[in-house]
Image (cartoon, rainbow, N blue to C red; front, side, top):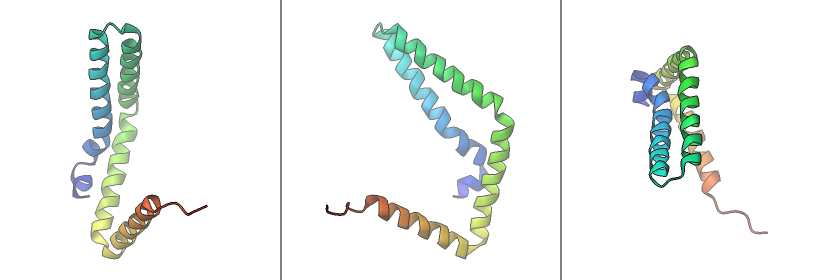
Length: 102
């Protein structure tokens, strides 16, 4: 959470960077295996994601500010932090619980 306060912009961009990097690596691998068609499709999708990020840069910067302020509010209010993490724990337990017998 501390990273969300200090560098929210980078935290928001990290998943896109990882996905685009891995997709580009997959496209290069496919090109070495002579699968040109799928490689081109993957590269077009990667370029589309990069174009979308450039187009929405100002919106992403605004989102980074909001995420940073939200994380700061969590640190400032201990009871809210307990409530948020308690809710997350309940959700994880619901997801991981065994399904009811039929």
